[in-house]
Image (cartoon, rainbow, N blue to C red):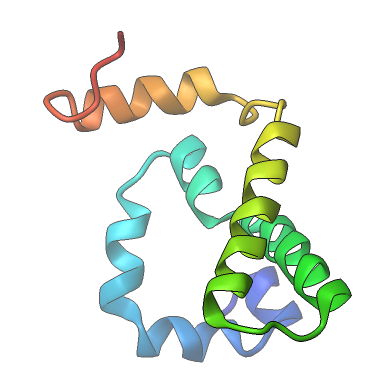
Length: 106
């Protein structure tokens, strides 16, 4: 509550207090992993692509037609994603240490 972040964004402290049981496990991760977890840029970009595809089409004759359009938008987007996650090797190493039985390095 006394940090610069809390002063700039006063809603953060009460929000964290309300969800403290969900915040604590997040803090157990190393900074590299936390940065990967909390960023929403990829999710927001994906949602934007889906919204744009749906908005340009407008109306759909059925739910199946809408699902097909979303599938095609997702498929086209996955082809565009060429850039890897920044500092992925460091994140991958940390995850392999923390979850060695579930996250093989190979």
